Length: 263
Image (cartoon, rainbow, N blue to C red):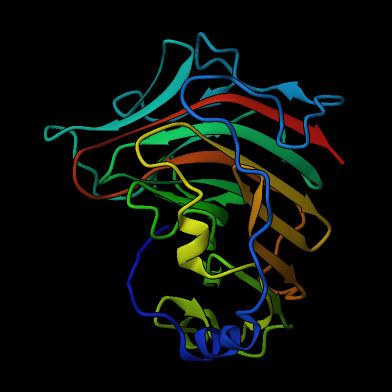
């Protein structure tokens, strides 16, 4: 996420109260260091896009990214504080419709995310603009849909939203770090109850299902946010994949078992 704030957009928050009777889905992932397949239990059609040993096929800032112990490691130290968010970007393709699964672990003060259907930002090294599956160490934002350098929050954790065709500029459409035109159409459970299913400073399983204009983010087998994006001006149908290290205090984020399946 480019800039995070605790304030929720009033229309989004108010609308979501209409659906608080919906319950969380079952199926939290395994704990600890046990490696798993994708959250459906079916690996058919998936290909590994990180070889577990090197960053071959990825490009990013070598100061903040490395391969270590079978993981992609993104790290900020007191000596390497960032001025802008930086990404490790997959060079294999620009996926359109796909399913992606991986596991991540992040320190308590960390801030990261998985960008997809994104584009490079001109004159900013290793920066991406596009959809993001948000991840943070405090699990305040983990699971929500945030558009980096764009419309900002498209769905908070626990929300099912529809994004209508744009009628306003980005500058005027963003209010309190959320896209004001977003319409909450359902609830996946309260943000707080879903937060209890996300492990702190331990391995969690992320699954993204991206097909057409339908964008779903799962953590540990549970649907956390669901966006239908009808905005043909700002929405994207394909683009780059990347993982983020965010501006802020020292932190470490790790990713492993990154698998991709075309849909």
